[in-house]
Length: 269
Length: 260
Image (tube, rainbow over the protein chains, first blue to last red):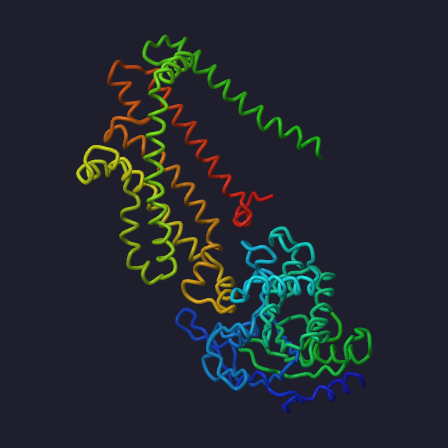
């Protein structure tokens, strides 16, 4: 029981800024949808600061509004109240500097792997575009599949295509909405370590939505734990384990179990 | 497994041929048993058609029918796709126009024949116009539907990469909707082929539709009537098979269930 108590202590809310310069900031963001004449609050009082190059996971149960928050950050939805700022400017719409990665469903099925990865590069001269496309094909390990169509690929490969398509336009921020949710558990583990490898190489700011506690603790610098609807930030947990993370280390288990307790689940099923 | 699929491959040919042969046999004996003097047997039909081919008339009729369908159909494609995309892209505009489309759509093109003759006189243009009408509305309606069925996720991805308005329509919405649009185009081609026959019975003096009505009126040549009917069926099938080839192009194949 003492380990649980020390986990609590280690998991103090972090209202202070990370040491990085602020990239993204939400100020009292609230979202409500109209359903059959009633307003349905989805998000309330979301105040969050994300540092430049930081990897932040938004973690919460289904329906807690974490995907809605991510869509609002990406500029697809407007907050009902409050504001979202990136680089000090209010987000007013989608922008190629911040790319949203859907589950692999976001890959364009009518384009080849090359066509998908080069989709955001139409303004580049074709030689330069081909070089960049090749570079990212290699980075995500899809050599030899450049001319393939998405329906000829596995789910994990499609997800790689989407990540490469996002990386190719060199965005500052990437929003990933349960990107590995539809993959089998082995592929999911492989994709996580690949994402970490890419993140460590490119140092994008990453906001990653997941409902998988292990995934969040394996990947994130900080985990934002959200409560069920209307979604609020319940707690922000810093994961102070250096990469590569030993997922059987006491500290890992301590942090993971702390979040489990926070969500209200006991340590056993 | 391969043995089984090999068997299926021969069976795919064998059974239809068997069924066709059975049908011809039934036809032949039905004519014999009923003792009809009006309805031709398969052999008489074949002789009649050979006669037409030798006279050089048949080929001209086929080409005339195909030409009318082609002109009317491509006009319908050329106008229907842009209009359908526009209405699908601007739902508020669609709300205004949709009632008119929905009222005009169920009217059989055959009902338009008198109007077509008033507008275009007796001749090619009237028949072409009927084909156009038959193909136009299905094309518009499927385009509207298929554009509005494009998953939000694709539009968002497109706009995320900086596409707006016409670019988004051309590079994301249209290719995403294309497989479904192709289904509509295929159906429209079939309707065009149905309608041209009816149009030719009234508005012109050539084509397979005219061949049917003319063979009946001048000399009750039912061998030619039935022959022309069969030709219409076979050509319609060929058009459909050719169109289906388009569905195997990789850019659109993802949208068809029976992809392999």
